[in-house]
Length: 551
Image 1 (cartoon, rainbow, N blue to C red):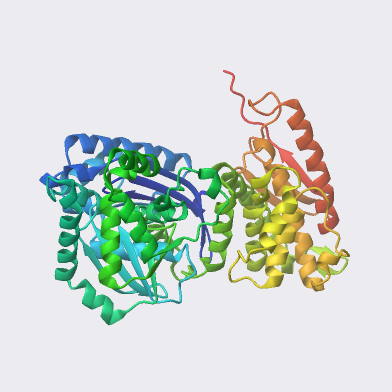
Image 2 (cartoon, helix red, strand yellow):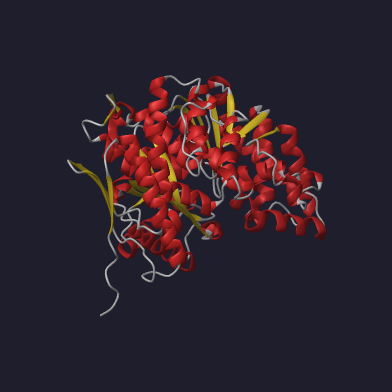
C-alpha cells in the first residue's frame, strides 16, 4: 500500500507541517497523519536571515518528519518538501537549503509567491465543492498573503504580497496601543493599493471568496464559537452546533473589534481561545478585515485544506498524469467532511484503517473473473462506483458513536439519511451508503425488508456484496488484532484465501487479552459464513503470528 501513500512538508514562516495521505484514483485522497511543529522562522525576519537557533529547530523538526515518512514506507518520489515566505526572503536561504539536504535528505523546493497561491487554491478545491465556480482564494501566511482567482482548477490570476500576520506583528506601528491598529490598517491599505491587486480583481472578478489559511480558520472558529459575543467560554453550549465554514463581513468585523480591545481581561481571553496563535491573531484579523473592504468581499467560505493539500494534488497529477481528476474528489469530500464533523482523530484513524482492509479485499475480489451466485455474476458490482460506496461506508460507519455506543450503527444510518450531508450523490446512492453503515454489524441485511423496496435487483445485489466486505473488514480490525498493512487476498479452486501477516493473538502482544481473542475468533467465523453465503465459495483466513522477539 506504500505506493499509494504521499507526503507533503510545508516549511512555513510560523510552523512546519507534515501531511501524509492515502491516494485513490481517479482523484480521492484520505489524510492519514498531520503533524505540526512550532518553528517560527519569522522571528528572524528583521535581519532577513535564518538564525542558527532557527536552523537547528528546523533540522530537528525535519528529522522527526523523516522518521514518520520512513515508518510509513513512503517512496522518495512521493515526498515533497516546500518552503514559503520566510525562506524565500532569507539572505542565507542557499546555505540553509544545502544544510537541510545534507542533514535530512530532503530537497527543499522554495516556492515563488505565485506557486504558493496556486497550490493554496488547488488545496481549497479538495475541501469545498466549488470546482465550477470562479473563485478568489485568499491565504494569509506568516510572512506573506497569496491571492488566486481560478476556475475548474486553472488559475486565471495570482499575486503574492509581503503582508503576513507574523511580520505585521513584528513591525513597529507605534509605541501607544491606541495608535498601532490604525497605523497597521493604513500600512496594509497602501501596500495593497500600490500592488495593483484591486484593479486586477475587478478585471477578473469572482463568484466566491475562499479562505485557506490557519489564521482564517481561526477567525471562522471564533465566529462559530461566539467569541465576539462572550459565548466562547461556554464550550458545551456550542459543542453540537454545526460549523458553517463561512462568515460574513459583519461577523468578521465583530471578532476583529473584540480582538483590538485592550486590557488584561481581553488579553487573557484571547490567549485562552487562540492559544499559540494569540500573539499574531490581531494582525491577522486586521489584515483580513482590510482585504474584505478593499476587494469588496461580503462573505467568505473557509477551507479546511490549503497549501499542503495543494502540493499533494500537484504530486498526484505528476505521478498519475492524465489519470488524476481534480474534481473527482467533489463527492468524496463531503464524506470526509461528515466524518470529520462527528469523529475525532482516533475514530477517524480507525475508519481509515477499516477502509484500507476493505479496499484490499475488494481489489482482490475484482481480479476474480467469475463470481457466480445462482447465475448472477457478482463481479459486475466490483466497479469504481462500488468501491466509492464501500469507502464512504467505511469512513462513516462509526459516526453514530458521537452519541454513545449503544445502537450506534442505527444512529450512523439516521445521520447520513437526514441533513443533506453528502453532496453530488443521488438519493438512492445516499441510502445505499446509509444502509451499509446500518448493517456493518449486528443483524444481517434482509432484502425483503421495506427499506430495500426502492432498490432494483442490481442495487440489491451490490448492497449484499459490499455489505459482506464491510462486515468482514470491521471484524478484522477488531481491537487491532491484525496488521492491516500486511494482507494478501487470493482466489483458487478451493475458494478465497486471506493471509494476514503479523496477526496479534493472545499473549503475543499487549492489549489483546483472551476475551478479545475469543470474540475476534467467533465474529470472524460468523462473518466468514456470511461471506460464503454471498459469494458461494469458502473463505479461508490465515493469521500469521509475528516473528518471535526472543533471542
